[in-house]
Length: 365
Image (cartoon, rainbow, N blue to C red; front, side):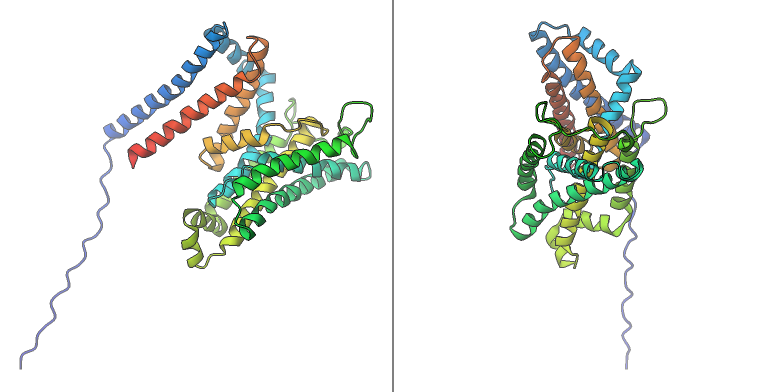
């Protein structure tokens, strides 16, 4: 009787790591990327220069004056940092839902509602509590109000299947109407004067950093960036949001609570935007008025896209937009150009950067 021995199993070949690209190739790619960045931004400024020439302005003089007035004076640098704080917080309000594959276009309305809640809290408390306590209460009120306002869009997404990009955008106009109603009617400080609320008491205003005009809102914004980065990068919640954003149906089949995750992302985003409204109210405006916080939410939305919805790069993107906002004053005062001119430059730069990034991804795919 013969015994047949089993054939030896062939061992699966061990995976071989792809060879590292030579240093010369990496240097060539870096040089190519640098050239493309310069070309993209150069094209944006070239088109903007043509616009300046059509307005009988010397592009070189305009750029020089804008640079000097924006970066050569300490007060201008401080103005940039002041404007950055609400931009950063409102941009984070876009970053968090984007991780779950949602578009929160309602930062503008959430900022307004957050400021309304902060103002209402300060008016209700008055002088009965210490200033620090009032600040904390305003922060909590702004965050809760912003979260609830975003939660309306989240509920409509989950219950009625209405896209959150549409509902958040439309809620911006509702929030603006709420603001106008309050400052024209019940909260109007002077019935015969301009429509505005009573100015916030000094003790409840955000304190300034030593020796500057910059309020602590920028510190709050940086802390928020770090916390969002940690939450999205190192927690189960952040990982689950990424899975949902990658493939919601696969996440649902894997047992993840997709509905709760989507709602939580919008609530957190709304809370951050509401905090931005409180920071702008208690650190810059000190009262509600027509045009309060105008364009903060929309600018922050663009900043989030410029940063590719990543928390840390949001700081740089918001610095760029804040600097462009401050530079717009130079375009108006020194060059005599319309106020909307800086919006054109902002749009050209954004198109150039996003266009470069998109073309790079296609080339690498």
